[in-house]
Every structure is written in structure tokens, then in C-alpha cells.
Length: 200
Picture (cartoon, rainbow, N blue to C red):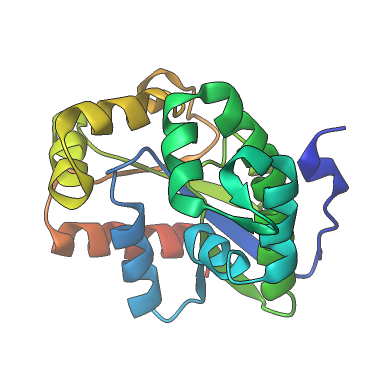
């Protein structure tokens, strides 16, 4: 059974996922949605919050004892290890992603409509949890430069991109696609158009 089949949904809530490759501008697009007055959630923020919880950390420590001291995982060491080992990364994601999605659905209960930034939506096969999916696309060179300025050298950026779905090769015909190759004003204009398209 896949993780998303185990998560209970609330049918009265209309949830829309915002996803895209690293450096595509997901956060910038979500900022536009916030400016338009919509509740916007972030799986990255939820992940950071879970890391503050003792039970969550203990669960990771139990699964990765070689990167833990007692019940406390050594987060930096684990991060460096999963960067080099795809199998280890898959194990960590199998633990983390269902818990992140469960928390997201819990936090959005009772809202008539909301958006969520979900970086690894397709990798986790969570698209079925949402009423619609918005994919933010950006030219590859611009993505690389954006992440390089923010996070590190080009080789690290390329390695991270290689672990993600190749959005350029995906069939996106069933999703709403945002081209983020222009200005902030143009991205806001796209956000307004999509909100209108969704009837919100």
C-alpha cells in the first residue's frame, strides 16, 4: 500500500499543491498567492517543525542509529550521508514524507480552500491528495543559477536536481503549468489568472 492511500482526506477542503523542480520559483509563486489572501502551507516548514518534536527525532534515530547519539539523530551527519547515498535518502523519505503529509492535511482541516508548496509531490506520488496541481516551470540555466547563489556550488546543485523528477520530460497536460521566466510582476499576474481559472 502506498503512503498516500493511508492518509485520510477531508472532502470539504479544496487543496491545491504547488510543485516544481529545485530553483523553479515555487516559494515565489506561493508568496504571490499569500499576497492574494489565500492560506499557503509549506512542506519544508512542516518538516522543520517535526524535527523539533522528540518522538519524530527518536523515530529517525531508531532507523539510522549510525547517525545518532542515543535518541538524538545527528542531523548534519545524516544530511551529508543521504546526499551521497540514494538508498539512504529513500529510507529517510519513506519515514518523513507520510508524516509531513499527514501533518499538512491535519493543519488544513476546516479551510474552504488552501495551497501547499510540496517539493517532492510526484516523487512521493501524493498528487491524488489534492484537488489540483500547479507546476512552476523555469529555464534550467536560471534554476541552476538561482540555487547556486542560495545554497552552494554548481556541482551540488546538479546533484540535487538529478535526484528529482525531470519536469521537462513529464506529461503535464493534466496540471496547471506556470512559466516563471519573467519578472515578479509577471509571476503575480500568472497567480491572479490561475486563481481566476480555478474559480476562487
